[in-house]
Image (tube, rainbow, N blue to C red; front, side, top):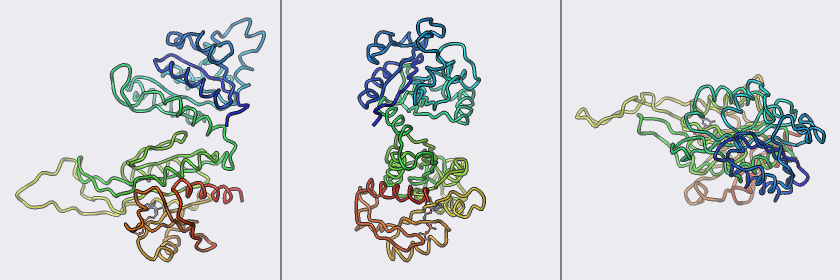
Length: 398
Ligand code: CTP
């Protein structure tokens, strides 16, 4: 899948550097050529010898190395690759990148390059959460740098939280997606997925049974077709796919804000089961049993995220797709819903318990568009997603 592709892999300092040795092998297994660069701090964690031996080519370490300069200048080195991957990237190197500093080989390559850059951060959770790091990440994202991870988990320093470097498999998937030449290459697509949680008080919430499986499958299929995917997910039962930008939200209002922040996009796919109502009187303290009787919950209507995007007058995505979960008169209800919401397509399905679709691995959908209702045979959720991604590619190409 990566045959003929050339990856410049920069390994900076961090205990996670050992995982990058595995990454080299995985990239090569897929046919990629890897040119390694090791920073001074990276060399504290893995040896130049092991990196060179695995890559099958000498590792670059110094900015002013006469032999390397004679063979290939650092400018050329930075531009000969299809992708620059920094794994792990430290908080320090990200800060340098955000500021445009170039005082060693890695930072100079990153400043001199005009090829895409992908970062796999690894650091202590406090360092990751520090406003300075988050500010630098925002700058780098603005500059078009893509990120994979970090993951939540326990870290070598004994703390728990975000900061663990993504696994080699995850980085490989992200790289493959980034270098994919699929029909959706260059298209930015946002996907909402999963349920939303609407708080009653700080410990209780109202939710629904959506597992997020169909939304995740759609995001994966779009990614595999080469799209840049922003995956906005409520608290779902399934893990988000690798190689997409994940925005985790809880409530409908958070989801709406995330969708607005992710625009503009070429297409918006709204697979989330958004709660129609929230508790208007949500308490900021835990409700206690009281002798005054049962609490009364008052509801307020949530924003209709799909409708708001479908009815945008400026910068509306070219294609807006809604989902409809119905239990009866599927085509009739979904056709009316498409009109009411103003979206281009509705993917409708029958979620009556007898169908086993909600929470199951299969789906039977009807695609409602300008051309009427098209019934798809019952198939796996992944197959539905792939078929839908192919249709989206046709629609965006036209
Ligand atoms: N949706 C949304 N924001 C909401 C509610 C729904 O974006 N607040 C989106 C869903 O992601 C889905 C579509 O709208 O793509 C269908 O949602 P649904 O809840 O079925 O539609 P309703 O308007 O609530 O219709 P009904 O209650 O009659 O089924």
